[in-house]
Image 1 (cartoon, rainbow, N blue to C red):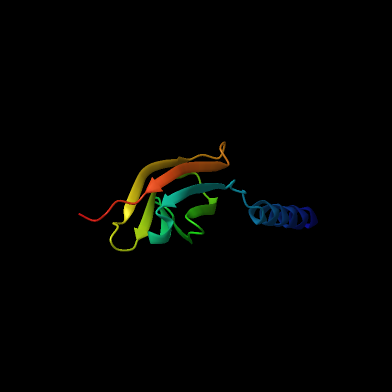
Image 2 (cartoon, rainbow, N blue to C red; image 1 turned 60 degrees about the horizontal axis):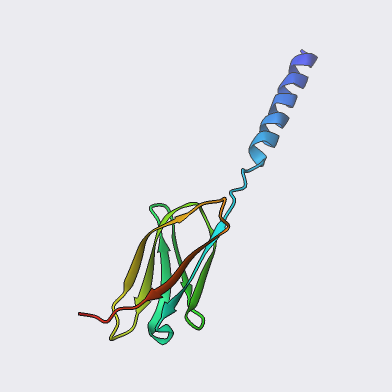
Length: 109
């Protein structure tokens, strides 16, 4: 009976220890620039499982703590420019920073 209690207690402790640790997911970053810088308002990174947004600073943006996956980068623009999207931006853990380069805003039609 005493051995059964010890075995049960050990099993409970082992279970608590096992479930108390979480798998750390390595995160990355997405960065780029927008021109004209003064007409871009906000930048979004959207994937099937995540939505991130950030502000621009002098036309530059950077998303931190981005999970691996495929994202669309959407630039919210002021008149007379249209919102702009860059599709299929692939973020992988073996590349800590994905640089999308320059995104040029286009006038509305």
